[in-house]
Image (tube, rainbow, N blue to C red; front, top):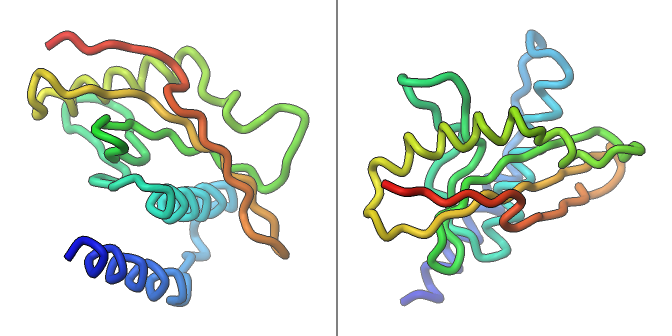
Length: 151
């Protein structure tokens, strides 16, 4: 049964990826690049065993957003995606500054209120490099910065 489910998910992922992309002309280029990167990261993580349970999660109680939330091997992962249209001197993951980490931690705390006390969690960072004529280059940093939740 599990293999049938996994096959169905893979087929739906391929169909979704094949659909024409609708990008609004009103969006700035950097937001379009960010959306493409998050989409690429979503499918890549799914292919590598993550079960994604939320995308672009927000809380009415705080400013900020969690790009992706998913499970991998029994751990709840809060995933920050950083996308660049080309590789530069500074890697994309360097944009997850200390201030950004505090923002992510605050958002994750709000999300964790709905989880059982014993839930193990971590923060992952995915760097996505896009180019027009090639597949995206994706790098995953598991447990990119440590934090323990005490509920």
